[in-house]
Image 1 (cartoon, rainbow, N blue to C red):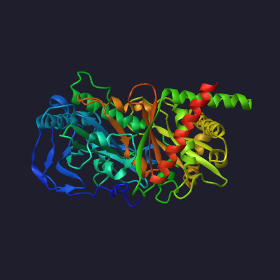
Image 2: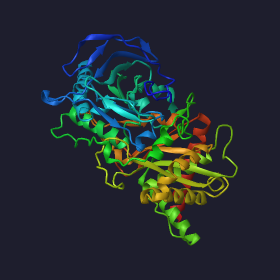
Image 3: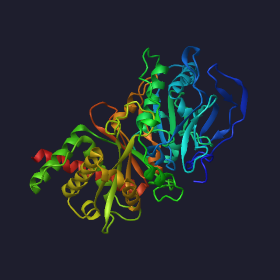
Length: 501
């Protein structure tokens, strides 16, 4: 990287940056500086943009200047694509424009309070002055977060956008805000949706070098609680990067400009991709567990620890592999397949890291298996057993955290990146994204848009609350159709197999 004065991100090809002429007056006492309305942009009309600064409730002391050195757990994300989520809300039947405007005003009025607790997110990542190859998250008074308000005037309304069915990524991407240049780590966008302005899309872009998903969703839950008028807000974050014991060797491996691991799962070719959500019910997942246990018994081996998460990742990984690459179904060849998923180390490091730590405290769990055992050359149960056993082994390795796990971290990630069909995982069922309620109801749909740009799948809790898991994935139309077919056929086979036992 030439320098962190240039934002370390991949540009969103669907939403060009727009320079807004800033107004000199303060719109709110919270410190927002409102912009003049912009021109129409790919189905959007930009109503205003603001730079929202942290402000304590009741006029207390503002945060002071502070530099948080990035740890090696942060540095691994310096050149990663930002995490992009969109929350879709239905604002309810009836009402009028005043109701929508009241919602937007309430979002803007409570954002400074939430940012006060999470003030580093109003800062920027920059090179550490006086040091080589070191970076920090720097906040100074007056720093703020870009908050844009837009209106969508296209044909598709909230019902069409919030569907699970495959839809063009280009229809969702405009709701994702870009990070301003200069090292910004958080940007927000609220978009009013048809019909009759009764829908809202809240886009959230976070640069991963600032914090992980545990921290970013902690911020969102805090903002939502403040906006909803909750009397007691979530516990504030712990802002202390000295808690993490640094590893110079790993920091250098990720921060060095020529590092082989600097473009982990970067997939810039997103044009034409479809984004879809698949819900695996509790029964679906139980059928996977039963099939894996039955195959272990048949082989005379100890069954792998097949939790609901293991079943989800194993099943999705298997179908992803069998869907093949563009132009062919079922990749052939020797070598090993890789799945990389996040493992939270807060409870496992020494000293123990607080649950509400603001920063990155995740490491990779890596599942690896022979390609020929996953691809369409074996029976479904053979492939499913192999995939779930590999995921369970990867979790066990990461949880135990022995010396070899840490020493081979960078090497293992680099190996995974060399796989022509590597897959990574974003999100967690623990984030409770469907509980992010700003006072106008829970989300109708949450999507991780950035999976299209990072060769990833996303996971979240089933929004129905029935104990299933949602999986999001972005693929070309041909691959999406094959993936859907493999998933449906595998689920049908598992269902029939369980009934026959």
